[in-house]
Length: 338
Image 1 (cartoon, helix red, strand yellow):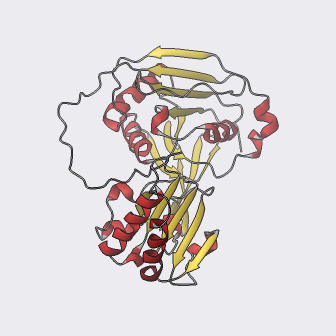
Image 2 (image 1 turned 90 degrees about the vertical axis):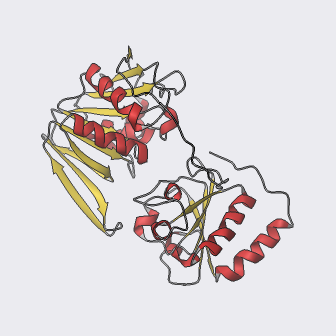
């Protein structure tokens, strides 16, 4: 890998909009050790920016605050991100990295369009060769790895490193120091919220984000009746409820509860799946740190290769009995989050 003239920019939305950036920061610093590294953290009075972390010598940490950033959504974030990049002189000859997620990916796409840059999407691997940025993405449900290359002056990608490269190992990280903090006040005009019309919903279960326990169902649940039992189970356990892409397409689960490569990424302590076969596309949305408990009638289902506990059973037989046992125990707990 050759030294890159590009600067490496880690662009962070408010801390309540994405996971901790520590692993991404270490991986980004290892891409081109001699390249300039800037971390730009966006914040607001109601949405705190990430606090500074130790960085390699010479790196910069920018804390950019906007008093009018009242909502954490793409409509308000994108103008603030663009002004922050311009203020930090990070909007040219840059590789801009953001944490993965539905919100950050939408923002990254819009920022790339505004800067006439190249949006490289959610990436599994990122590398720099001279002035060329190369990323590896999962395609076709995780069955194929696709490499994208770009020499555009501005390249943007979201990245969840699968591991911390050797160049940023524990010995090197321990030698990092706290960077000089540059604070700036953003004044970009943000679109105002004129009117809201809440959509009535009977969904009383907690959202997938930050859930410590998730109950998930797949095509094998066969319809609304099966998911009604899963919803009861989730409520009894104080868990969130999710589903695979086919269940969303069938209308059994709202799109906000889709887990997978084209849905949401979850990082619970435990994921209880029923009727999910375990395709790479679905498992791409589940943290490798999560313990999976799988129920499937097919003993050859791929999910069992990943699960710590596997049960070969018909859900029609297992779920009613499980709910009876849980009903005989203590009252349903309050949903817990990480």
